[in-house]
Image 1: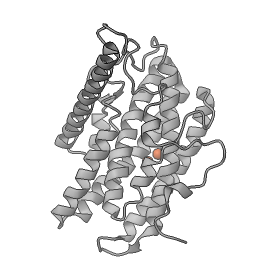
Image 2: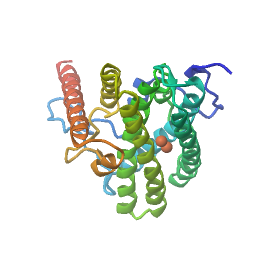
Image 3: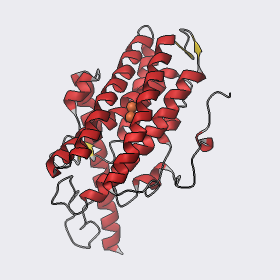
Image 4: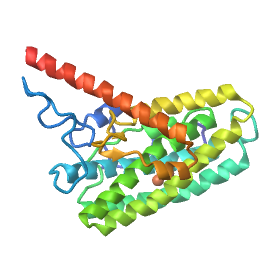
Length: 288
Ligand SMILES: [Fe+2]
Ligand SMILES: [Fe+2]
């Protein structure tokens, strides 16, 4: 069986729609969008007339889109963890992995398989058809990095860290709207995600203990992924951030306070840049 399996060759049936990351993020049904009045000439644009609240008419669609995106992530996390069991020889070299790391990845495969099953049933419960929203393969691509430490920072710490924030937000949304199925599905997956992120934190520290340059490269990769997947600042700590940074669960997953502060800062920066882009677009529309 070949090593480093390309994303284009991942097996999907006809229900799934593959797009690039930019197209996925530009889907107007997501939580990552400006307020409805954005683009109206002469109007002061509101940043984000959106939140996961029962009185927000767009909340159900955004929740369905978000959870379908998570479902795609569960499939790819399973595929990525499976690849990490296979792609490397056992050893302590930079392109090898300790056997215990492979055991962790095997356990993760088991969890992600269960998350796929939960996600399929939750989609049905939420009124979503598989393939109703598109699939981008960024998570799997991050899991193809030739350095296993990069895989664990990009996937386990950055993207599964985002999953912690999403699951916690959706769990609270389920509680607020009185939907115990949504709430408990999120709670169960959240518990496993904390373990997966903790694996990433532990292996990052262990494998780079004597190699500060490798650690810095891995952390820089994580910062880039964290910025892209703060979803234009939709994930953050502002009062109106639709997806809240879940500090307590991140601490349990091995993040130090200054690391969580840094992610909050990256999200704030991404939000500022998104605001600038929206303002420029509105100004261009006004001018035309
Ligand atoms: Fe998962
Ligand atoms: Fe996971």
